[in-house]
Length: 283
Image 1 (cartoon, rainbow, N blue to C red):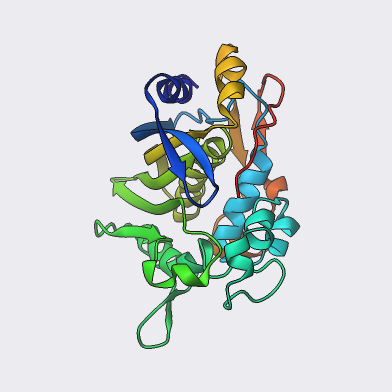
Image 2: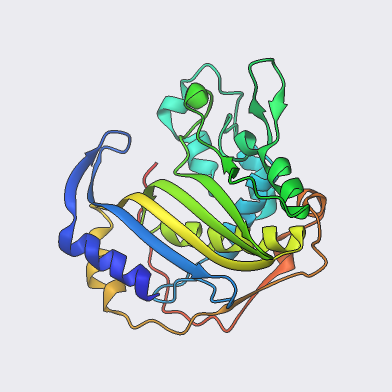
């Protein structure tokens, strides 16, 4: 919580107003933020100065792992997070590549599981990393990226959290995740939960100990219609102690994550929070 609140205060104190063409709103913005999550200590980075809906964040992560491209599939897992971008984004609605209601196109998990190759085939980036790590291999390139500029026109949204780089030192697995853009009041805690959980899951299914997850954000911002709630409400609250995440120990393989795992296989203990804050969402 300390590093999260420090970032929020930094944006309020030092941010520069930038106009955002996609949303038509201004953002109070800073460049470069570095956060760390101690997965080895199970210090789950769940925001306590407002109620945070961690199940939806983990459900979204499961959808990415499965390579889903439909908002309906994400809803079935327990998260509506892609409904607006799939069905209310005017540019995407007019895109001839859109395949109908709920279609997201070739974004996020699709790129992770089926990156298009020049020969017409696909590359499963996630499978390659999992297989290497299970064999104890780290070639300094255990990278999963969603960022494919050649296919931006085939999806409803460019990826914000775009690259995950795994590193194996002895028996300890580390993760460095890169994010080009972050809606701090709304999106950041989703991203924090997902970075933490991704490292915990990857360590569990590859047979390693989880170390630290490093989260690097380039553009961190607060939208103009969120500022008062952040400055006058959330930043006035005192945080509670970090909760702990419990993952079903029966999850042992990537195939488990692809098939039977649901949000019911995750539990959070000792979570205490202040009331929810209804921050506006920008499509």
